[in-house]
Amino acid sequence: MNRRTFVSSTLMAGTAAVAEPFSTSADTTSYFELRVYELKGNAQENYLKSALVPALNRQGIKNVGVFRELGKGEPPLLYVLIPYPSINAFAEVNSRLSQDSEYQKASESYRNLLPDRASYARYKSSFMQAFSGFPQLAVPKNESRIFELRTYEGFSEDAVRRKIAMFNDAEIQVFNKVGLTPVFFGEVKIGDSLPCLTYLLTFPSMEVRDANWKKFGNDADWKRISGLPEYANTVSRIQRVFLEPVAFSQI
Image (cartoon, rainbow, N blue to C red):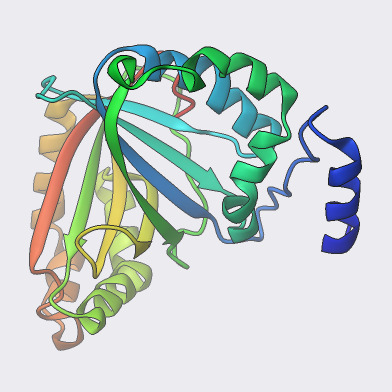
């Protein structure tokens, strides 16, 4: 279906139903949106569970992750990871939501909240393109686990480019070998703290996490590649947060 045909058929359909799902071919590179909501109540989780996540699934946007911070900091934050099968899926997501009658009905009370009853104060969003060495989201087993979200800032665009090359060329392989299990790697195209990259790891427990990072630091392959001059001075600051999935998270 070309774009002209799609627009024409969508206009004819009105708000009766959502447009056909985007392709989720494994041959394409994924894109990721990471939202971080500063919460004021629990209506945000209800909206995500009952309205937004099901609507995204109907668009062919699967495996939406929803996480809370471990430790329950203040203000409470909610992390939402949306993996898009294409850049067009990201560009058209809101227009498709406006055409989805099920979404409109499920989100009505949320959308009509008055300012003093709002479920969040604000949210930040970053948009990422998957690394060529890890082009698709890897969904872990549905079992008890924790997640570690890490952002590496670089002092220049070239520093981040070289760090991404380091991951693609060798570091991802070392991660897999020592049990630093990746969920995604993304080059941040739009967001805070640019230039930077972000990735997500998962572990059965914090004890396993600590042990596997120790294995990584002692790994011979890691020591070799980290000493190569082309990968020197690539990371100027690391941000790290530990997460746990909410009950309806699809990751």
